[in-house]
Structures are given as C-alpha cells and as structure tokens.
Length: 411
Image 1 (cartoon, rainbow, N blue to C red):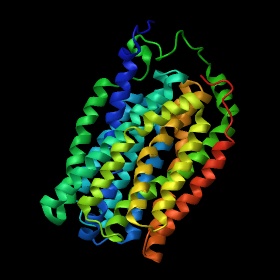
Image 2 (image 1 turned 60 degrees about the vertical axis):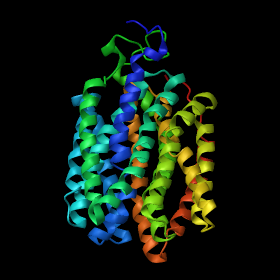
Image 3 (image 1 turned 90 degrees about the vertical axis):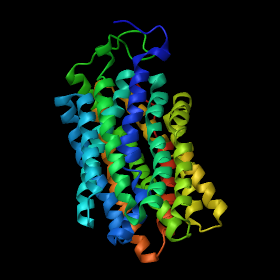
Image 4 (image 1 turned 90 degrees about the horizontal axis):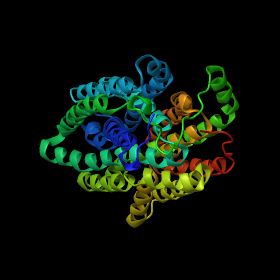
C-alpha cells in the first residue's frame, strides 16, 4: 500500500465531500425540509399538531427499521451500494409525497423516506472510521455533516419562494424538486464513494502503517468489552435525538402560528440556522479531536440547554433570535462527535455495527420527541412546554457526558 504525499489530496477528502452531498439529500432535504413544508401542508391537508408530529415520528420509525437492518445489508451489498439504495428510496418516496392527498399517504411515504435515510446515513458515518485515523475523525465527520446545514439553507430560501409563487399547493413542487435532486445525488454517490482505502491502494488518512487486523472472535470480544460505554454513549445520543428534532420540526410552526411571522421571514431564519450549522460539525469535530469527546459533548449540551430555554421562555423576539443562532451553531455537533467516538473505542471493522447500535437510541429519541411535543402543543396551545422539556433533558445530557470515560484501546 502507499500513502498520499499530501493529506489534502488523499481520497478520504473525496469521501468527505461526497458524504456531505449524501447528507444534503437524505437529511438536509429528506428530513429537515419538513419543518419548512409543514405549515402549508397542514393547511392544505387539514392536519392538526398531533398529525404533524406523527408524520415526523413515522419518518423516525422508518429510520429505526433501517438502522436495525443496515449492518446486515452492508454485509451483503457493501457500504457504497447500500448508501445509493437508500438515496433512491428517499428520492422516490419524496416524489410520491408531492402527489399525496391525505394524512395516511404522507405518513406511509415519509416512513419510507426514513428507511432510505437510515440506509444512506448509517453506513456513510461508518466510513469515517475506515478512511480516517483517530486524530482526524472528528474533523472528517464534521465536514460530512455540513451537508445537513447546506440543505437547510437551500430549503430555507427555496420553499418560501415556491410557496409564494405557487399558491397553497407550493409544498407539492417543493417535495417534487428535492426528490429529483436526491435522485441525482444517488448517481454521484455510486460513482465516487468507496468502501475502504484499500480499494484505492491507500491507508486511512493520518495513519502511517497498517493497523492490526483483528480476528472475528477478537472483534466480538472488543465490542463486548466496550458495550457498557456504547450504552452510555447511546443514552446521550437518545437525549440529543429526543430534543433537537422537536426544535427542528416545530420552531418554524411556532414562529408562524404563535408569533405570527410570515413563512418567508421564518424561512430566512431557518436559512440562518442552516448557514451557521455548516460550520457546526467541523468546528466541534475539531474541538473534540483536541479536547476529547466528552468535553466537546459537555460544551455542546450546555449551549443546547440555553437555546431551548430561550425558545420556551416566551420572551421578546431578540431572545428567540439568540435561541435560533445558538441552535444553528451546535446542531450537527453531536452526530459528528458520535461518529468519531465509536471509532475511538472500537475497530474500524465494527464501525457500522457500533454506529448502528447507538443510533437505535438516537432513533427512539426521535420517535418519542415529535409525538410528545405535538401532543403537549395540542393540550397547551403552544410549544413552550415542549421546549422546556428539551432544556431539562439536555441538562441531564451534560451530566451523562461528564461521566463518559476515555477509550483504552481504540483505533
């Protein structure tokens, strides 16, 4: 094998940039466009808050299904083909939503979008451990997740523009457009992604010699040895999943319905979230490389707590703006740190399995969060209670992160 003379020309960076495009499609468009599209969809399809929450929950149920199956499918197809298959499912289902006429149809198709998202996202984040050494994993994962932020910027400007120029049914054009974009990116992914550096005759970026190859029995022993830590990390990931998704799904609806912002104005604020979040992953990924994963998590969850509390307190608009800015700065930091963390504790061969394992916790949080938030909003008439609960849960996450131990023998 040979190593690259210049790190910046290592094919790992191509993996990063392609991964960013994949996440732009499957998460930035497939998931985080929902918050922008829900207000007009709600009016057109006569949806209440509980139904809106269930649509989001359905997506996460689909995501959970694919997380359970991802390791097996990757073993059969390989990461590159699994990711591409997931993107194709995302594209077809979103195009289908553009033609839906009722709640049940949207729910079923958006569940399929969740399945595709999981099949694309989980193997993709597992590639970080294959292509990058410990000292560069956080930065690499951060570059990948910046695609989420670019997707939010795109939808923050595009969806209001479509709604303004297409009437009450503009949300249909929105879903159709992002579905077609996702189909195009699926082609790019199959052309550029590779399962591991060996396919390019390379070592992982930052690694100077071949890493030891573990036998299957030793890999199993290594996983069992770190199982308690994976559960600990999973619990933290659950709290992130249960809270950030409530904010991402309902902050625009709250701004439009409770604070009487226009959809175009709310869209510009959502674009601000996306613009800031482009730097979220690289910034906190780099920080976790330097200070450690647990310190990075503590800093992030303190900032999340402040953001949710400012949204919940029903203060004047400048405090709401501050909440949005803080959320944008930190939103993709936790997936970045989690992707790097599993590689710190386990061998690269276990990356997809380990990331899938902790993502089960994350997925349960995402299922519970929107449904509970929609229910409490129907009862109280606003989302203040939901945002307060998010603030409490992220405070708990700070304490859990504090007690996360250092890896003893990660790769």
